[in-house]
Image 1: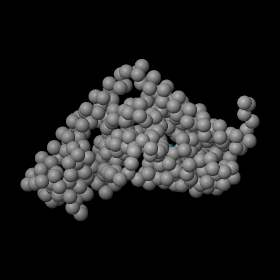
Image 2: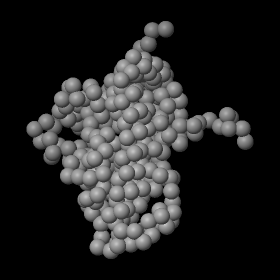
Image 3: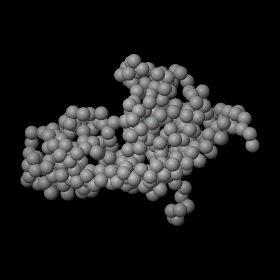
Image 4: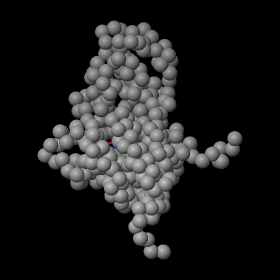
Length: 335
Ligand code: TRP
């Protein structure tokens, strides 16, 4: 079949520009996007408007919003093939969110577990934005008629409500929005904490359990050297060896080797030697990625022009959906 005749599906993903991305985000998501960019129309959005539902340091938010996208580029995501942009650059997100607010029920938002958790954590600042956070997320997704949304477990409920809102709107006004599906990557790797290998590696972990993509070489090597392992001595992937399994997964994720190949390579060697090898491989790969990242960041002129062009591309697509919505709900639009 002629590939050009197949209509590519659209993937939308939003990333909060807060916290430091880890090798878990890299191997579990980012690295896979590189392979997907030919098969899908992808939009990657740094969702700065979501971030302000929790108090931020302005200078830090500003820096991270751009750095997040530069990191995507450094990982190999091509800003010519994909749309990489900052949410607040495309006003249609806020505009559609307002309309969708009027088609979202107080009761259903009250049931969002993330809202309940976050309002406990930030009990001094339970603002309306925190409450309607999922509606802005629905606007992000529905504006681009996304078919697929890659989401972790923590965002599944938000995707569900997005689908509910879209179906409700379509039910009243006829087909307007594509109903998005969750996207589960075929080859996604789950990377666990180095200190608690039965828990997922988290970007908010500062206890040495997680390796940041931008960590320094000696920190990377030191953290991996200190990774918790079992009391055995064999480097094999097996039940009850969560720590070694995790290190093998990380090693294979960065080298492209299979688990069997890695097991053979390290047969008869001790944990110490193995950890050193894993540390070196991770540090080398991240070092190269960091060099590209710094290069991209240093060229502000290119970065800014890329952001502008991509925001325009996104705005064009978003405007099409928004006009449709405005017409359907009965907003007068002069011809
Ligand atoms: N809420 C998501 C998170 O915290 C980020 C996000 C915002 C998002 N808009 C989105 C994710 C749209 C996917 C699609 O991880």
